[in-house]
Length: 73
Length: 147
Image (tube, one colour):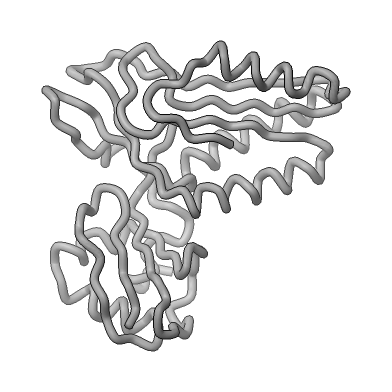
């Protein structure tokens, strides 16, 4: 299972999904409108590393983080 | 880098940084202090931080600074920060002024764009995400096929 966590203001509890690539995660998240609305402006990390490739292979126990727009300072 | 609960004690932090480096033979240090302004109905700001990626981001910048012979120090608040107090401080220590002056500019701008910190306005006791002032991080939109 892959843990998907939603950081900052998204305000949703983590979910657990079966997926072998980030592309499959994208497909599942886009089915939920309350999550999908954040995706066009959110960055993604796998195991705390920011990623830019949907074809990244995921392994059981991996953690995917969704990072919405930021404003530190 | 250090995360503090609530407002930063600017004088104490700056004195600590100064004392830590005053014998290090850096010829220049440039500091930046961010202060919460009184604006509209805002009583305070509040911050969430995702520390694992923040520390990774900071370590990459520290490595860049090291290549230039410089060192970065940074402090940020977690939770609520009242108006007229500070939520963010950073300083560049470098052998010569030019590196410090240039590095603080690009470091602070990248901090605003890519440090995983979320800001909320406290208005009437409620915490409201500062969405309009926030910036999508590098790589945003990948799950929508926007890259």
